[in-house]
Length: 288
Image (cartoon, rainbow, N blue to C red; front, top):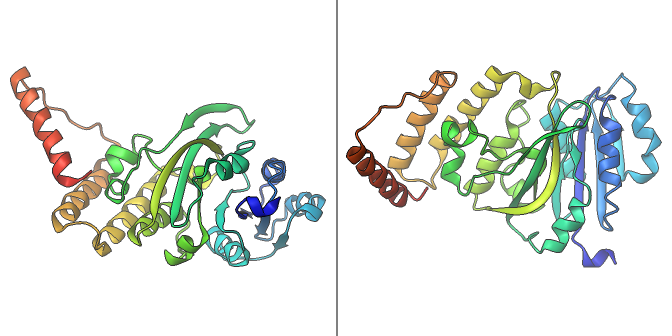
Protein backbone atom coordinates (compact mmCIF):
# COMPACT_ATOMS: atom_id res chain seq x y z
CA UNK A 1 0.00 0.00 0.00
CA UNK A 2 2.84 2.41 0.79
CA UNK A 3 4.08 2.24 -2.81
CA UNK A 4 0.89 3.99 -3.91
CA UNK A 5 1.72 7.05 -1.83
CA UNK A 6 4.78 9.31 -2.13
CA UNK A 7 7.07 9.13 0.87
CA UNK A 8 6.73 12.23 3.04
CA UNK A 9 9.34 13.19 5.62
CA UNK A 10 8.30 15.51 8.45
CA UNK A 11 10.93 17.19 10.62
CA UNK A 12 10.24 18.78 14.01
CA UNK A 13 12.95 21.03 15.43
CA UNK A 14 12.46 21.55 19.14
CA UNK A 15 13.93 23.33 22.10
CA UNK A 16 12.18 23.64 25.49
CA UNK A 17 8.65 23.43 24.15
CA UNK A 18 7.26 20.91 26.62
CA UNK A 19 4.04 22.90 26.82
CA UNK A 20 3.21 22.17 23.18
CA UNK A 21 5.42 19.42 21.77
CA UNK A 22 3.12 16.50 22.57
CA UNK A 23 0.34 18.13 20.55
CA UNK A 24 2.80 18.59 17.69
CA UNK A 25 3.94 14.95 17.81
CA UNK A 26 0.37 13.66 17.96
CA UNK A 27 -0.67 15.85 15.04
CA UNK A 28 1.99 14.12 12.91
CA UNK A 29 1.61 10.54 14.10
CA UNK A 30 -2.19 10.67 14.09
CA UNK A 31 -2.12 11.39 10.37
CA UNK A 32 -1.84 7.60 9.93
CA UNK A 33 -0.21 8.31 6.59
CA UNK A 34 1.02 5.00 5.14
CA UNK A 35 4.40 6.26 3.89
CA UNK A 36 5.53 8.67 6.60
CA UNK A 37 9.02 9.32 7.95
CA UNK A 38 9.09 11.38 11.16
CA UNK A 39 12.28 12.90 12.59
CA UNK A 40 12.67 15.08 15.68
CA UNK A 41 15.76 17.22 16.23
CA UNK A 42 15.79 18.47 19.81
CA UNK A 43 18.35 21.08 20.78
CA UNK A 44 19.04 19.70 24.26
CA UNK A 45 15.80 20.61 26.04
CA UNK A 46 15.78 20.64 29.83
CA UNK A 47 12.08 21.30 30.43
CA UNK A 48 10.70 17.76 30.09
CA UNK A 49 10.46 17.74 26.28
CA UNK A 50 12.81 14.77 25.99
CA UNK A 51 10.68 12.69 28.33
CA UNK A 52 7.64 13.43 26.15
CA UNK A 53 9.53 12.48 22.98
CA UNK A 54 10.61 9.19 24.56
CA UNK A 55 6.98 8.21 25.09
CA UNK A 56 6.53 8.14 21.32
CA UNK A 57 10.00 6.84 20.40
CA UNK A 58 8.66 3.56 18.97
CA UNK A 59 6.65 5.52 16.37
CA UNK A 60 9.36 8.07 15.49
CA UNK A 61 11.85 7.06 12.82
CA UNK A 62 14.71 9.02 14.38
CA UNK A 63 15.19 11.48 17.20
CA UNK A 64 18.09 12.95 19.10
CA UNK A 65 18.66 15.63 21.70
CA UNK A 66 21.76 17.78 21.96
CA UNK A 67 23.28 21.10 20.87
CA UNK A 68 22.39 21.74 17.24
CA UNK A 69 23.44 25.27 16.29
CA UNK A 70 19.94 26.70 16.30
CA UNK A 71 16.63 26.09 14.56
CA UNK A 72 17.80 26.41 10.95
CA UNK A 73 20.78 24.14 11.53
CA UNK A 74 18.52 21.59 13.25
CA UNK A 75 16.10 21.56 10.31
CA UNK A 76 18.94 21.12 7.82
CA UNK A 77 20.29 18.28 9.94
CA UNK A 78 16.91 16.58 9.96
CA UNK A 79 16.46 16.96 6.22
CA UNK A 80 19.89 15.42 5.62
CA UNK A 81 18.57 12.29 7.29
CA UNK A 82 15.25 12.45 5.44
CA UNK A 83 14.58 10.07 2.57
CA UNK A 84 11.13 11.24 1.53
CA UNK A 85 10.24 12.42 -1.95
CA UNK A 86 8.53 15.40 -0.29
CA UNK A 87 9.56 17.07 2.93
CA UNK A 88 8.22 19.60 5.38
CA UNK A 89 8.93 20.83 8.86
CA UNK A 90 6.52 21.56 11.66
CA UNK A 91 7.82 23.48 14.65
CA UNK A 92 7.27 22.11 18.14
CA UNK A 93 4.62 24.71 18.98
CA UNK A 94 2.68 24.24 15.71
CA UNK A 95 0.62 21.32 14.37
CA UNK A 96 -0.39 19.59 11.17
CA UNK A 97 -4.05 19.78 10.23
CA UNK A 98 -5.88 16.44 10.64
CA UNK A 99 -5.65 14.26 7.53
CA UNK A 100 -3.55 16.75 5.57
CA UNK A 101 -0.87 14.32 4.37
CA UNK A 102 -3.36 11.93 2.84
CA UNK A 103 -5.29 14.83 1.29
CA UNK A 104 -2.09 16.20 -0.25
CA UNK A 105 -1.04 12.82 -1.63
CA UNK A 106 -4.47 12.10 -3.10
CA UNK A 107 -4.75 15.58 -4.62
CA UNK A 108 -2.22 14.69 -7.29
CA UNK A 109 -0.40 17.97 -6.66
CA UNK A 110 2.74 16.47 -5.12
CA UNK A 111 4.90 16.74 -8.21
CA UNK A 112 8.65 17.21 -8.75
CA UNK A 113 10.10 20.73 -8.54
CA UNK A 114 7.17 22.07 -6.55
CA UNK A 115 6.72 24.22 -3.47
CA UNK A 116 3.12 23.53 -2.44
CA UNK A 117 1.21 25.93 -0.20
CA UNK A 118 -2.12 24.97 1.31
CA UNK A 119 -4.21 26.66 3.96
CA UNK A 120 -3.11 27.39 7.52
CA UNK A 121 -5.18 27.93 10.65
CA UNK A 122 -4.02 30.42 13.26
CA UNK A 123 -4.44 29.16 16.82
CA UNK A 124 -3.74 30.58 20.26
CA UNK A 125 -1.94 29.04 23.23
CA UNK A 126 -4.99 26.90 24.08
CA UNK A 127 -5.35 25.59 20.54
CA UNK A 128 -8.42 27.68 19.79
CA UNK A 129 -8.60 28.75 16.15
CA UNK A 130 -8.41 32.51 15.70
CA UNK A 131 -8.21 32.78 11.92
CA UNK A 132 -7.31 31.14 8.62
CA UNK A 133 -4.76 31.96 5.96
CA UNK A 134 -3.72 31.16 2.42
CA UNK A 135 -0.95 32.90 0.54
CA UNK A 136 -1.65 35.35 -2.28
CA UNK A 137 1.86 34.94 -3.68
CA UNK A 138 1.84 33.71 -7.28
CA UNK A 139 5.35 34.48 -8.58
CA UNK A 140 8.89 35.39 -7.59
CA UNK A 141 8.43 39.17 -7.94
CA UNK A 142 5.56 39.18 -5.42
CA UNK A 143 7.82 37.72 -2.75
CA UNK A 144 9.63 41.07 -2.70
CA UNK A 145 6.47 43.19 -2.33
CA UNK A 146 6.63 43.35 1.44
CA UNK A 147 4.18 46.19 2.06
CA UNK A 148 1.53 45.16 -0.46
CA UNK A 149 1.70 41.41 0.06
CA UNK A 150 3.45 40.42 3.27
CA UNK A 151 2.29 43.27 5.47
CA UNK A 152 -1.31 42.61 4.34
CA UNK A 153 -1.23 38.91 5.31
CA UNK A 154 -0.60 37.56 1.81
CA UNK A 155 2.70 35.90 2.73
CA UNK A 156 3.60 32.22 2.66
CA UNK A 157 3.19 30.87 6.21
CA UNK A 158 5.67 28.05 6.84
CA UNK A 159 3.32 25.41 8.38
CA UNK A 160 1.15 25.49 5.24
CA UNK A 161 4.00 24.27 3.00
CA UNK A 162 5.44 21.03 1.70
CA UNK A 163 8.07 20.76 -1.02
CA UNK A 164 10.15 18.45 -3.15
CA UNK A 165 13.29 17.28 -1.34
CA UNK A 166 15.42 17.74 -4.44
CA UNK A 167 14.20 21.34 -4.79
CA UNK A 168 15.12 22.06 -1.15
CA UNK A 169 18.74 21.03 -1.64
CA UNK A 170 19.01 22.61 -5.10
CA UNK A 171 18.00 25.85 -3.38
CA UNK A 172 20.85 25.48 -0.90
CA UNK A 173 18.78 24.48 2.13
CA UNK A 174 18.24 26.86 5.02
CA UNK A 175 20.76 29.54 5.96
CA UNK A 176 21.92 28.33 9.38
CA UNK A 177 22.77 31.90 10.40
CA UNK A 178 19.24 33.14 9.69
CA UNK A 179 17.13 32.71 12.82
CA UNK A 180 14.06 34.86 12.09
CA UNK A 181 13.04 34.56 8.44
CA UNK A 182 14.86 31.52 7.09
CA UNK A 183 11.62 30.26 5.55
CA UNK A 184 11.12 33.49 3.58
CA UNK A 185 14.69 33.23 2.30
CA UNK A 186 14.04 29.63 1.28
CA UNK A 187 10.92 30.50 -0.75
CA UNK A 188 12.90 33.12 -2.68
CA UNK A 189 15.71 30.68 -3.38
CA UNK A 190 13.31 27.94 -4.47
CA UNK A 191 11.61 30.15 -7.05
CA UNK A 192 14.93 31.65 -8.14
CA UNK A 193 16.30 28.23 -9.09
CA UNK A 194 13.17 27.48 -11.11
CA UNK A 195 10.87 25.86 -8.57
CA UNK A 196 7.12 26.04 -9.17
CA UNK A 197 4.83 27.51 -6.52
CA UNK A 198 1.47 25.75 -6.40
CA UNK A 199 -1.37 26.71 -4.07
CA UNK A 200 -3.93 24.07 -3.11
CA UNK A 201 -7.28 24.31 -1.25
CA UNK A 202 -6.17 21.91 1.48
CA UNK A 203 -5.83 22.59 5.23
CA UNK A 204 -2.17 21.76 5.90
CA UNK A 205 -0.86 23.48 9.04
CA UNK A 206 -1.82 25.14 12.29
CA UNK A 207 0.33 28.10 13.33
CA UNK A 208 0.30 28.88 17.03
CA UNK A 209 0.63 32.49 18.14
CA UNK A 210 1.95 33.03 21.64
CA UNK A 211 4.10 35.57 23.46
CA UNK A 212 7.21 33.41 23.74
CA UNK A 213 7.64 32.71 20.03
CA UNK A 214 10.40 34.39 18.05
CA UNK A 215 8.09 35.97 15.49
CA UNK A 216 6.47 38.07 18.24
CA UNK A 217 9.53 40.34 18.01
CA UNK A 218 8.17 42.40 15.12
CA UNK A 219 11.12 44.73 14.65
CA UNK A 220 13.66 41.90 14.37
CA UNK A 221 11.40 40.01 11.97
CA UNK A 222 10.87 43.12 9.87
CA UNK A 223 14.57 43.95 9.66
CA UNK A 224 15.35 40.34 8.82
CA UNK A 225 12.76 40.26 6.04
CA UNK A 226 13.98 43.50 4.50
CA UNK A 227 17.65 42.55 4.68
CA UNK A 228 17.04 39.14 3.10
CA UNK A 229 14.74 40.61 0.45
CA UNK A 230 17.26 43.29 -0.50
CA UNK A 231 20.16 40.82 -0.65
CA UNK A 232 18.32 38.20 -2.73
CA UNK A 233 16.80 40.82 -5.01
CA UNK A 234 20.19 42.25 -5.92
CA UNK A 235 21.45 38.72 -6.63
CA UNK A 236 18.41 37.82 -8.72
CA UNK A 237 18.82 37.13 -12.43
CA UNK A 238 15.17 36.25 -13.03
CA UNK A 239 13.86 39.83 -13.01
CA UNK A 240 14.58 42.86 -15.19
CA UNK A 241 16.72 45.73 -13.94
CA UNK A 242 13.62 47.90 -13.98
CA UNK A 243 11.72 45.44 -11.77
CA UNK A 244 14.65 45.12 -9.38
CA UNK A 245 14.96 48.91 -9.07
CA UNK A 246 11.25 49.37 -8.35
CA UNK A 247 11.07 46.47 -5.91
CA UNK A 248 14.18 47.61 -4.02
CA UNK A 249 12.70 51.09 -3.62
CA UNK A 250 9.59 49.49 -2.18
CA UNK A 251 11.62 47.40 0.29
CA UNK A 252 13.60 50.45 1.43
CA UNK A 253 10.41 52.47 1.93
CA UNK A 254 8.72 49.63 3.79
CA UNK A 255 11.61 49.18 6.21
CA UNK A 256 11.66 52.89 7.00
CA UNK A 257 7.91 53.47 7.19
CA UNK A 258 6.32 50.09 8.00
CA UNK A 259 4.56 51.41 11.10
CA UNK A 260 3.22 54.52 9.39
CA UNK A 261 -0.05 54.53 7.45
CA UNK A 262 0.38 54.83 3.72
CA UNK A 263 -0.56 58.33 2.63
CA UNK A 264 -3.31 58.51 0.06
CA UNK A 265 -3.93 61.48 -2.19
CA UNK A 266 -7.58 62.19 -2.95
CA UNK A 267 -8.04 62.66 -6.69
CA UNK A 268 -11.04 63.97 -8.64
CA UNK A 269 -13.13 61.14 -10.12
CA UNK A 270 -11.88 61.49 -13.76
CA UNK A 271 -8.27 61.34 -12.57
CA UNK A 272 -9.04 58.33 -10.41
CA UNK A 273 -10.25 56.45 -13.48
CA UNK A 274 -7.15 57.41 -15.42
CA UNK A 275 -4.92 56.35 -12.51
CA UNK A 276 -6.78 53.03 -12.14
CA UNK A 277 -6.36 52.27 -15.86
CA UNK A 278 -2.68 53.22 -15.67
CA UNK A 279 -2.05 50.91 -12.70
CA UNK A 280 -3.76 48.00 -14.47
CA UNK A 281 -1.61 48.58 -17.53
CA UNK A 282 1.54 48.69 -15.39
CA UNK A 283 0.68 45.32 -13.84
CA UNK A 284 0.35 43.80 -17.30
CA UNK A 285 3.70 45.27 -18.37
CA UNK A 286 5.51 44.18 -15.19
CA UNK A 287 4.05 40.70 -15.15
CA UNK A 288 3.00 40.95 -11.47
